[in-house]
Image 1 (cartoon, rainbow, N blue to C red):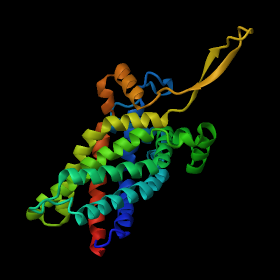
Image 2 (image 1 turned 60 degrees about the horizontal axis):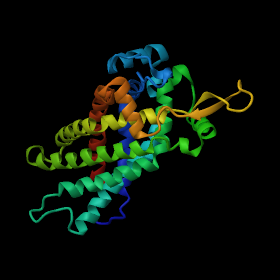
Image 3 (image 1 turned 135 degrees about the vertical axis):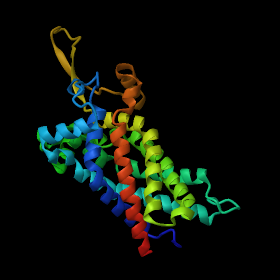
Image 4 (image 1 turned 45 degrees about the horizontal axis):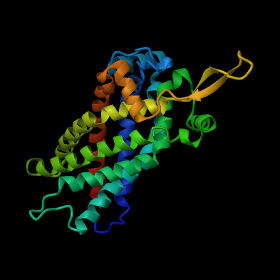
Length: 310
């Protein structure tokens, strides 16, 4: 890539992201269900319905149908078409800019880990913030499933907009951007690092891409799961009406005041740990890693193959 305005990293990044999303989405649905359950503050999700990823997969399939595992697939595809396109295109464009300015490589020709991580962090945070509405739609549809409420993409968007306003579409944008920044800061530099050091053994082949992406996915799963749990719960919460006694002369009068279960990321984290223990922050870790592994493998192999057209 000799031109920083080159469009190919953006297009190839988006195409590879969509391919990976289709291949791993059912695992993401089980992860979301596991992260939502067991909340003491939200009675609708206080029950522990699933014992783990496999149990969630089986129960969702039996009780709601296999289609429920793909509830939210279209906002997820829309998300990857925006988030994936912007993230990977921006990442490799920033690396090109850093290279041209002599910031990425040292005198020995090795890539700077910190510069690499900075490019990835910026790309992840910017792209996830822009694509946040599609993430909210995906989470809402995954939680309810087709077996409970057959709500389409447009109808789900309409309900959120009517009842929660434009802010409802950006619910959880803080932890979403933080999670994306952490994942990108770990995943992309680790992949590039492993790929570079495995080049002598495997060359620039599928085996190298497979191993490098698998190692990168483990690191990003460990670093991002607590933020992901908080993000999922914030995105799924809706304003509920709490009856309060009025202080007017009519002593029996009551008013319905809308409130949220969590006031923000910190409040959600504190309440989750206080009510469910620290391990609750790692709910859904196994499906997160199991999904990230194949997702990254599919993505990076697809991306590397598309790069052959450069």
